Length: 618
Image (tube, rainbow, N blue to C red):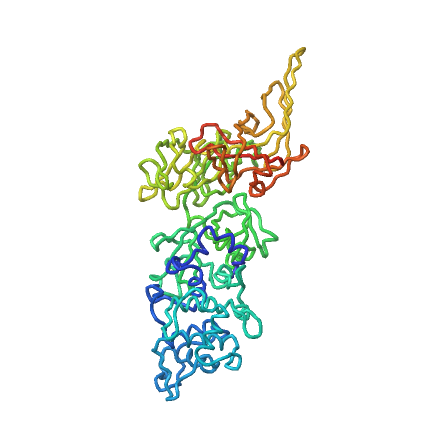
């Protein structure tokens, strides 16, 4: 088993749920989530944290050990008796012994420990100071005033308001240990760092790196999911969405965190021809399948795809991808047979000479599938760019054209339904342009839009009658090729007569040019869109512009009208006729810049977004 969950990869998975707070701690915030991830605070058999319940002295000892260098070495039952009221078979005997041996918590003069008595604030304060290396000699005054004064001065009381003589609740202890790990020891070291934990910008134990280090996986579902804790108490996410066990299928990839009692499941699969291994097939670290390259994230997958494994170059395989998009496992195509739906984005013909000397025309297709992956297929096809196709994969991939399944209706404001149909939680959506380009979008992008029949090319229903695949045409405008024309030259030779146009433009910051012969597009410098037909420029036109009065994040205003700024907006600062691409956040100061924006006004149901912005210093 490989733990290939680096901090960078973990950061990238925040949006899909890996770092979502566990369900039981979601309402109480990061302190609870952090100490739960550390194993300091655990739920009951049903996963409940019971935060209002009081903490006993025995339970506090267990928490102390979990927040100490002994966290991985101490168990519960030790086989010997420490105190008159802590027998050898007591569940916390080893935790109590460790706390006593280290001088953190003491017994009573009569030889008892009172393991079931609630621990009070002053007791918890005293223990915390001892853990940090303080002794009574470091304190001014008598017990408990001296201990509580130092406790408060160190900030250990932050987050809770329990007073002297009152019992500590589980919520109080969550805050206490959260604070304790971020506090300097008597020697000037942050206690959490002495235990090997990474701190975040606030000085507390970093929740992200913590979940990373304590998460086990990847594993492949085969009949059942094997966990070291009760699956009935687990919180389950599938592809970043809260789910239940009925949604988990064979050949899904899963990870788990015991302390959080959380399971993350992924069902991303790639099927196609295995064409290359890097750096070599002997010990591959990445492979190319269906025209795309994927990093390998497990030793199991590396072996299967190596020259000593089950699959070799030229085989058709199914890659099972994990949480960071790497290959977690591999299986036979027949084991995970299914279908992709998508749009042909490129179709190139080539003649193949067979061994008998006959010429066979084949087509190499690039298909953007609804899961957002562009796959490559070669065969005896005759499809146009923009065609909607289904790819069935079993022993081999078969690409078939799909007929139009039109649909009309309004998408509700939550982006969860289209007309009379509910959208599946796992719905995959493509929007395509008349040029044949396509882009994956997400349901909320369509919220409130009314789609006509010509906007819906295809939809597919799952077993519950919900739309799980949706392919659109000109619904958002997101698939269009937006550019900033920086110079326009239309030339007319009346003697010939002939027409010629020379147009230079920026696309995603890159300068490009186009020369038209016997045609002029009558453009102006500014934002525009280029449309294509069979890969060739078919139309170039400007889009509408406006001077912005404000710009903040995803919203821009022109007077009393508000526009949505596209996620892929191109922003340029112009100085001495030179254009520099910059983030939108860097030009939000309208006192400094005059902002000209161009928005699509081409009639898309979910269009009207700002696609380009040019900033000029005032």
